[in-house]
Image (cartoon, rainbow, N blue to C red):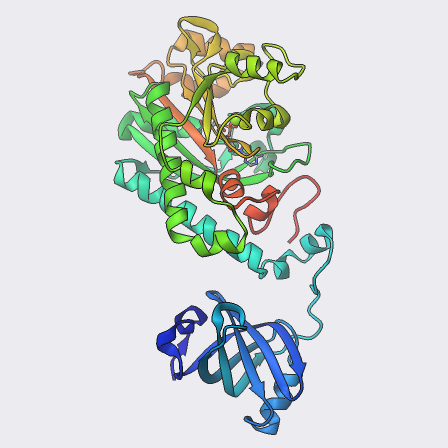
Length: 432
Ligand code: 4AD
Ligand code: MG
C-alpha cells in the first residue's frame, strides 16, 4: 500500500477508505480500552483511535506504550469525527513502530532558554513548523517576482576583505595568514555586477556582530539584496514596495492555514498587498515623534522605540527617506538639493515591527565617495576596487537589502526574531 499524507486524507472523499499514514506521535491518551494518538506529519495532524476490541493484543499493547514523538505507521479507515482536531479520525487496524521515543524532553510549559537548548527537538513544534512554511513562501515569492521582472540572480562572496556597514558589527575570521570578515551585505559586490548585468539580486546570509540582544537582531540572517543601474532612489523604492506587496499577497494565498494556526490577524496584511505605501521624510518623522512627546532632536538615529511609535500612524508598511548623512552609510548619495541628507530610505513594517528594508541611491562621483571613505575612517586602498567603479563608466544606481527574518517576523506576527530562523545565532548563543 502507498503511504498517504495526513492532509490528503482529511476530506469527505476519503471517508470509509482504508489508508496508511506515517508520522510522529504528537499526543497520546489511554481512555477505557482505547488509545487516542494524535499523529503528526509534515502536512498536519490527525487523531488515530486504537480500540482494544478491534486490534490484536500486541497492537493494542504497542499503542498503549507509545511515547511522545515515537515514529510510527498506522493502517486504518478514515471516519468523519467533528470532535477530533480537523474533523476526521483514523480507526486503526494495524500499527508499526519505526523508532521508539522515551521521555521526550519537551512536555509543555518549559522556559525559553530550555527550549533553545533543545532547539533541535523544539523545532518540530507546530508553531515553528508553521513559521517555516510561511518563510518558504516568502523566499519562493521573492524569487518569483524577481524572475518575472527581469532581475539576474548572482552569487556574491561571504568571506570579504572590507566592511560595508561599519566596523562595529564586523565578524573577523582567520583567513590563512591574513584577516578577513564575514559579509555584512552583498551590496558592494552587487554594485560591481550591475556594470554588466544592470539589474541583479542575491540571497545570502549576512553577519552582524550585534553587541546587544534585542527582539529583532540576529548575528546571522538571510539577506535579499537588489541593485540596479540607472535607477534613482524613487525607482528602487517602487521596486521595494512592489516586491514586498507581492510577497505578502502570495503568503495570504498559500499560507491561510498557517496564519490561522498562528492566530495571526491578517487585516493589516491584506491592506499591505496594495501599493503605493506611504512615504515620509526623516524631518517629518522627527516632527511626529516630537508631537508625541518623545525627546529626540534632528540628527539622532531612530531606534526600535522611535520606530515603534511611528508605526502607530500607519496600517501598511511605510517609507522614511532623506536621513541625515551622519547616521547613514558612507556609500549613500547625498541629496544635491540638501547636502546634509542622503538619498536613502528605510521601509518600516506596521504593528510596531519597524525596519524591514534599508536602501539608497549610491554615491557615483569618485571624489565625493573618496571623501566619504576618508571621513568614515576607512583606508581608501581597501576600497580601490569599489572606487574604480566610479572611474570607469560610472552610472547612477540604487539598491536595497531586505531582512528575510524581519519580514517573516512581521508577517507571522512573532514577538521575537529568533523564531523566524530554525537555528538562531546571537550574542551568547550558537547551539546547536
Ligand atoms: O539596513 P541594512 O544594514 O542595509 C544594508 O546592509 C545595505 N547594504 C543593504 C543594501 O542596500 N543592499 O540592512 C538591510 C536589512 C535591514 O533593513 C534589516 O531588515 C536587515 O537587513 N537586518 C537585520 N536582520 C536581522 N538581524 C540583524 N542584525 C540585521 N541587521 C540588518
Ligand atoms: Mg538599516
